[in-house]
Image (cartoon, rainbow, N blue to C red; front, side, top):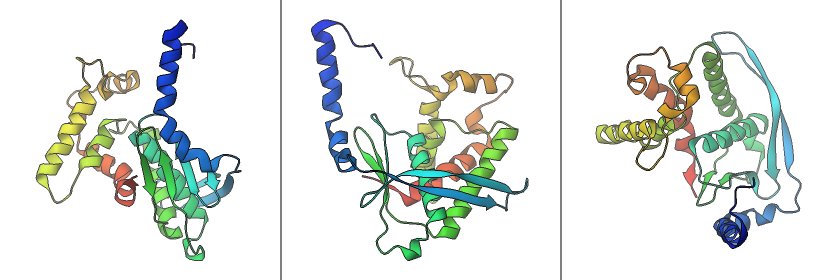
Amino acid sequence: AGLLPHGAFGALALDQQQQSLVGLQEHLAPCVGQTAARLDLDLTCADDPAGPWRLTGQVGGLYPGLGLMRWRAGKLRGEDRLRLWLAHLGRWAVADANLVSEPEPSWLLGQEKGFVLAAPLPQTEARARLCELVTLYRQGMQRPLPIFRESSFALAERWDDDDEAAQGRAYSAARTAWDGNSFNDIPGDRDDPYVQLVLRDVTGDPLAHPDFARLALALYGPLLATGADA
């Protein structure tokens, strides 16, 4: 991107960046030279209250002997896990796990750690989960939903239905993600121009909205319950 300093300092900065990605490079080495397979997706979401939807597309990044692979040259975010979850659901919405003797996992690799969805889903469950997310998408096309890039994931990641103390910590983490850290120049969700545009006429605390926790758990709860850091 042309953002490196000139001269020796630029070479040093580049070397530091390359060293930070050695682990990711090693994990991706088995994919080199392989051709990833694709699955065609074509299903109808008939349970949507607004009417049926036909969902078509492809799920790519399927490497023989390795599984579904996704990666990011940086720290893993909630949205990265969500993209893997969508691909995982699409994969098992097409394939029948009962006919696969040794199902391969779905991997998300990052600069520091990874995330894995090891267990396949029954086809009916995968399709139902995918359609639930389609329904959320359709609702979001009709009105703004209190789902925020960092805050929603921060809450869902720490939530425990049976532990009120954990729920308090989850809201605290969501608040931190919402506010950011001005001292360290770390923006929060409230600083996002698009969030500001959507909330320009809204009064009150968006994180206190009754749908904030519900939608965060609906969006991220199933994937966090199924997957694990690796």
